[in-house]
Image (cartoon, rainbow over all chains, first blue to last red; front, side, top):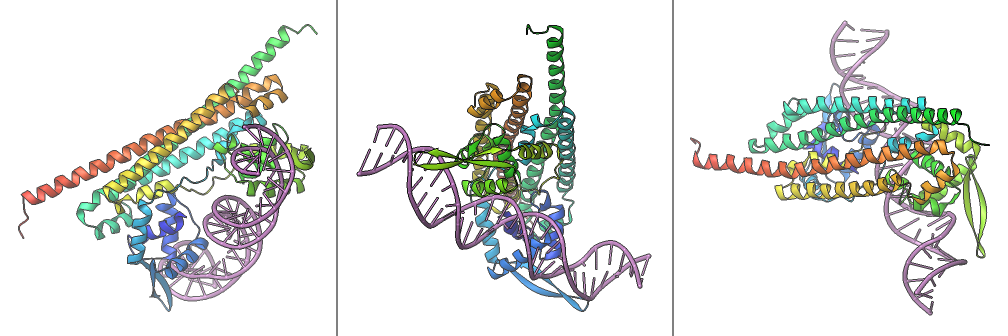
Amino acid sequence: MSLRESLLCLLTARPMTGYDLAKQFDVSVGHLWQAPHSQIYPELRRLEEDGLVQATDVPRGRAVKRAYSITDAGRAEVARWVVEIAPSSRVREADYVKAAFLEFATPQQARAQFRALHDHYRATHASYEAHLRDLEAAGTALMQTRLEAAAPEDHDAIVAFKTHVFRGLAQRAAMQAIWAEEGVALVDHLERRRATAEARRAGEPSGI
Amino acid sequence: MSLRESLLCLLTARPMTGYDLAKQFDVSVGHLWQAPHSQIYPELRRLEEDGLVQATDVPRGRAVKRAYSITDAGRAEVARWVVEIAPSSRVREADYVKAAFLEFATPQQARAQFRALHDHYRATHASYEAHLRDLEAAGTALMQTRLEAAAPEDHDAIVAFKTHVFRGLAQRAAMQAIWAEEGVALVDHLERRRATAEARRAGEPSGI
DNA sequence: ATGTGCATGTAATCAGTTACATGATTCC
DNA sequence: GGAATCATGTAACTGATTACATGCACAT
């Protein structure tokens, strides 16, 4: 249930519309938790009902948009959540399930799987690294706003926790990319071993 | 949707009842994908409807139990799935979302969070390592059955892909444990920095 | 005028969780 | 006789996905 909390955390920076929040789920928090707008709009209504956010209609041409801002109750909820020791969530390692059963694929197919994983982890790594550099330079628009509103003595912590997170994730993705490459090498190795074993059988026919 | 495929993969080893499968989701595949029996029983019915598995009633005392075995269509489905290049699933990094917003916690609370994560990653690491050792010795009961049914030249691959997976996951968990420890150190560092900054302000009062 | 971005929703469906419910078997 | 384990489900609910649907604003 991190959607709710992610929305609240985003709103600690500044009031935003559902559309703004959805965009943040594409760029900043989106690296950690993804959600489509079809989930965001109803959730904001629920947060409003619960008094954790407050909506104000902002004119936009002759139409209006709903800007949500966090309430004191919302800030209290963030403070509660951030401290709560969460029970670990159910394991969901789809990539690894498949990799564990690559015995059912041909060597070529298994290699293609590991190569696809490698590409994916590399791309993930690159996007984490890019976001990390942005954060380190306090370069994201949202971070700017966040820091402006915060006391100067809090600036260090605000940036440091986020960079720590993305450094960790970047490292993890880099490691996973190497793991996927090793997977390719493993397939090669298994293929060679099997070939030698077959050659041995052909050269030294059994006594049947 | 890895539940379906995990069930099929388990049934490639031997026919099993829903209860047997649920137990495997606690020990072997359970390290990669978890599911409660309330999800497994209906899914098996659906797999049966789709002709991917076949149920036979096995007497047990005066009651009967339903043993499911994989069909040729089921094996074909596994072969299709294992080769399919899956679009990467939505990002869901609940731990990291929280860690990114630890600015809203006190230093003590932030340390407690990172310590909890550390404990969790260490425990995860230990369980991966234990399972890895089992697999390397081909020691799990299911692996025994699997190997007995398979051609000798396939044994290497059957074991190798699974050990590769668990080696990767163990490494990942070890890295995450270190990251969490570094998180504790980061909180210490931020606390010291803030204390020095405050001391400086006290010693050098501003000209207001 | 036309396309791109801003803006907000609903509906149907699917996957996953938690709780409830029941009964047989086996071992002590 | 009682506890643990084997065995199989249903129901209510929550969370997440995908598709459908609409309309204004602004720049070219």
